[in-house]
Length: 306
Image (cartoon, rainbow, N blue to C red; front, top):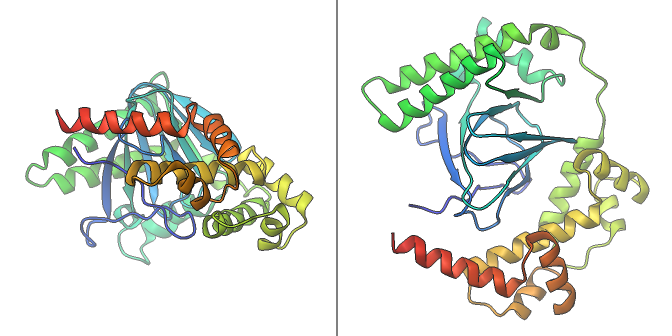
């Protein structure tokens, strides 16, 4: 089984590499015992996404809300919504269905697209939708998600049509059940999300250098205090906490993919001292860098022997 690692572009936007340009649809089965970072960090998609939990609980954080989902439950993410995904424990798994809006809307200027797809994508009243089994229409959507998953992996004759039919049914159910929310006036927009996206991009390109709060604030043309408030409102953490977390996650990549010494990795990801690096790493990963490396090596060996 191949290691799954989500690909995040230069702006922390998830890059979706569809197998076929004329059928912009993809399913990833995410098995978190194989994910070197341990979770999928803050990012956003241009495309539409439905995630479905297969094993154990997941915590989906969308903007400033946390949603815990059990196996058999799911969530829809609208386009360009910042979110993060954390498993509850080792060997959690889920599927992520990614698709371009053209799967539903058809041609670029179609009535279906303008009336029933763009209205959903363009509203800021519908960042996400949770699907639970105890709500009838949501449970029906979950069954169609399962149908899509089955069709995609069986790939019987005309499986693409089966996928499109199921997606269209899901979309129809969404817009019918959420019509009032879609058609209601858009809530007042906050500049926080654009500011945070800009700051995340700055941190991504400068994390291995000395970075101050002033640097992060200047990257999005706001004061230090306003920068902190924006991060708190969107990510529920400070810019400094995000920077430390990002550095730790980059360190896990070095620990997973290289034999570099821990002291070198410490410097590579922007920490000035090995002691502080170890303390910060343990805060976010619940283990030391050495313990993490040993765990990964043992996991690689056990996986390769299966």
